[in-house]
Image (spheres, rainbow, N blue to C red):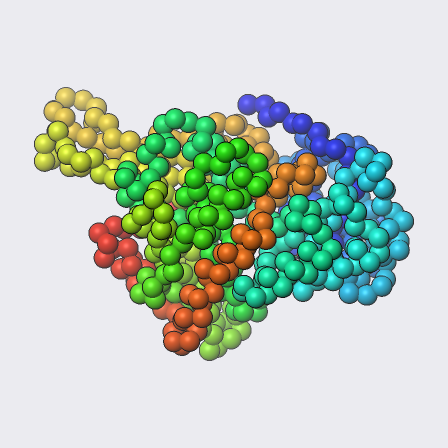
Length: 486
Ligand code: NAP
């Protein structure tokens, strides 16, 4: 399948933190792939900015290496790599000082010449405010200028609100692009296409037909490398408040009147506001221990008394007409037995089996996989082939994007590159609005405060296992079970 590529407007994109891990692993390789696809007009420029003293040539060389490491499939073409590198520039700027701002201003082209002007804040969150202020004070922020803000967006409601207020002093909401890369995943957008582009699903998408929903983000990696950040955060703040919450919103929201930024975000906000508080006995927190081969969480976090959760499972309800009494089970964790992210919509059993007691009662499951291989599967019940009576069998109707889109699927589906192109297009639909982020914290904070007040310790689970036993109990006591991670 050949994907249609519509070039964006020419731009000047400044990446603050252009020498950092995220820029090297995701942002620049993503831009390179879009460049190879012909989506980036030749007049565009990408400007790395950080404190390190580098010149353009030094920056280009370091990004050449990054492309070979993180965009290997395209970096085999030396001409393409060189063409791309020729669009790269570098300015040494200190976000909290005065160095470099004048040089950056001189380098930028005016956006009234038709160039989109965007600044990507790929730096630690303590620099988001100073950068916004620096851009304003140095005359770099115009009404059309866009800023892209990475996660984490606040540590709780209070800090998120303060950050929103700080950014709002310098930029309007329609200039602020808060990234949640889960929203850039092909499957997540396909979820909206499936829900609102087909007649088949939406009539069944409610408490009457859906038994429950499971959202799982399971990782095999531990917290090694970012242990001190993670230990101050935990799975609730790092994953649930943002990524899992966003997935839940897209699954549960009402159909927006149109696919535009505010219409979609209004509906997502209503979901978050309708989420019930979660009782303490509906939350299981876990922390991985060494299995003899892999290190424990406390070793990775270098905190021998840490009570931070590397795993969380919870059951929540959305108090509205569509979802009344339908449980949403969420779980996410590190050092689990599989790397798998999935949303599963588990439909109710057929009310009666006409095929007799032996055939049992069956249920359909729509599984939306985010990783490792993005795609969707609808479990349907059919007759087992062959003679011997009416025996029923559950089989998957599988739609793996890699199969459907061919070898280019991997290139097409990278979340960062799609989201960066949306910034240039000025499309905020797949970015979080300030009130959404605050509402998500307002739901999360009391849960965290609750376990901190009680002094709860997370339950231990073996590295490489499915998580703590209590998490299985959380769902099994409702007569349901977690989907098997593969
Ligand atoms: P990183 O590797 O530590 O890079 C930080 C960057 O910021 C470096 O380029 C650094 O360069 C620059 N920097 C630090 N202080 C500065 C200052 N005062 N003025 C200007 N530049 C400064 O961090 P990262 O992993 O790329 O993460 C960047 C952001 O993305 C963070 O908010 C992180 O939470 C978020 N994020 C990262 C990932 C990931 O996979 N890495 C994933 C999701 C979100 P100099 O030292 O040369 O100044």
